Image 1 (cartoon, one colour):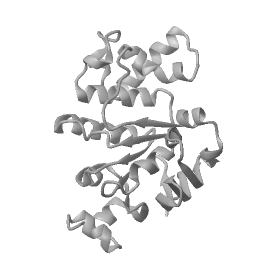
Image 2 (image 1 turned 120 degrees about the vertical axis):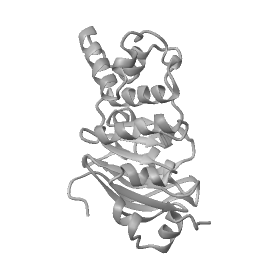
Image 3 (image 1 turned 135 degrees about the vertical axis):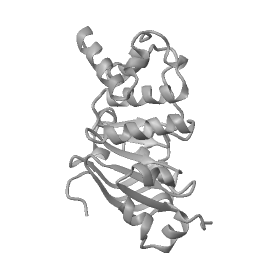
Amino acid sequence: MIENPILQLKDVCISYTPGKNAVSGVNAEVEKNSITAIMGPSGCGKSTLLRAINRMHELYPDIRITGEILLNNKNILKMNPMEVRRMAGMVFQRPNPFPTMSIYDNVLAGYKLNGLRLGKKEKDEIVETCLTNVGLWNEVKDALYKKGTFLSGGQQQRLCIARALALKPEVLLMDEPTSALDPIATNRIEELLLVLKKEFTIVIVTHNMSQAARISDYSMFMYLGELIEYDRTQKMFTNPTDKRTEEYLTGQFG
């Protein structure tokens, strides 16, 4: 189905407790420079799957993952987690700028965490480019050394996106990035993602079906840890092949 996959999931299973899978046998390919939405009811494994793509699941002690996750044909499950997190940037549900850092230092936090040294000129360029990319530069350029926490919720989330983009990731992973934002801030983030997909591949977990319909090229529907359906968004929303997908999309679910 996908001609140019940047990300391939091959029989991915994830469990928090032995013998009970939170994600079961997921197979999917993600197209480069596209937005792919992962939808499904609460507890269906969406966030678990997303976090596995940048090895965040390993922060839990007993978690097990089998199968393969290939990013640009490299199996990320066999790589150094720090390297994987440079390749797969993550943005969370609630905006989380580092509270003790200035806006400037927030953008560059990934370099600091990875022990990567940069010259002043290079730092300045990265900060300006990333803040411009998320539409924040003109709003904050005179306040770069203020704390990121003084910004509004929508601005903080755009700062977090700028921070994730600073390391030039292959894939940008977003876990319900607008669920804590008001409609105006949500709209700005959605418009931003449509621009960013020209340079980045975006995978977004969303509860908001109308958001998936508005911005995604492809959609996955997950239920009880399984990938039930995966198709072009327009096709899935107008003519789903699985009855459970149709029931979820039309609000008859559960």
